[in-house]
Length: 408
Image 1 (cartoon, one colour):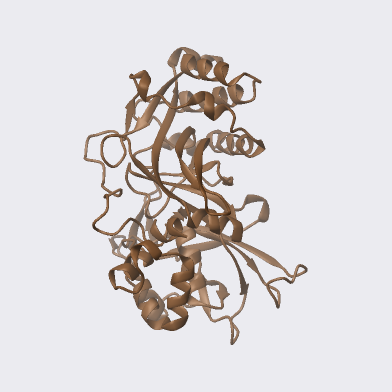
Image 2 (cartoon, helix red, strand yellow):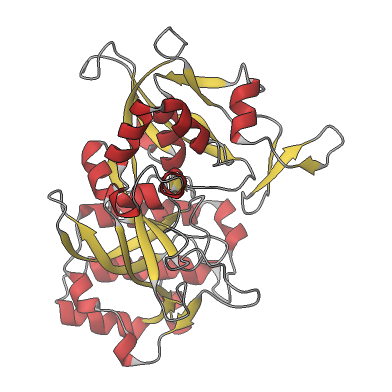
């Protein structure tokens, strides 16, 4: 479970999707969260053929999920609000949308891997992320949508709420970035911390749904969405199911629980996983709750229709292993990307991960060119994959050459 623990508030972000519990490796490791220096771009045009991605290899990784992800991005580009985010570093809205259509056409065109590679090189300029180190190294973690039991009203068992977005939460109208708490005179101030919110009861009346455990609440916060079973038992198939997702977050800083537990000596850095966190929580819940409070960031939720869930930060449904969360301040939204890293199998064996994906989400801990978060899906199986996702790799973006834009 290292990825989810280290890393998403996919805050989807799932948005959230995206904030593995640790946020980044311990202090002695690489600083994947190193911010981009002002005035620099997170993307670099690939001019050296030796640095091009394995496009022929990626051609064999297509499946119905990829086409679904393409279509979700097309829905976003069709919305007038998408135009607010372009031009982006010289890329126009028309160019970005045409590039999406062009890549979808190439993926579905029945070309051989070599033909696909040649067609992509002919029509697109390829950019690589500069990564955390300027050499293209990106840390890929994972996020998912968990499944928990819950109730719409509090009971003796279900006492811990998820809150709806409060009216005084201020966000940037263009980027959606949190600005703080809107005061009566129209100014903003830093929002209350996680501890202040939960201990003061300041949001009473704004509860959306109730969980049985503070750790369940926290896990939904760091992943940004959840499927909630409202029956008497977890396996009650006839019970109502509620789908919740990201509705906003405070401006407070994110600190990963896993990282805090390692720093406090509760768990060794190479042993941090969800099992270890749960074990420590059952042994000493208050101590772990106090460490949760070090994460001052707080996430708010809304109920989704099943057909629109789980939704990423673009407001469209994210797709397992095809939706990527990145820092939207420095990367363009909605377009095709190529991820070249490694992942784990359900047997927790490492294997190559070379896939076309769509940049459709963001996350509370995903705020630098050296970070990206892969949406792994829904439920326990996805939890295994997301928890084990912690690997360096390369990230590539495709920009349609201007002479091809009018064709789409």
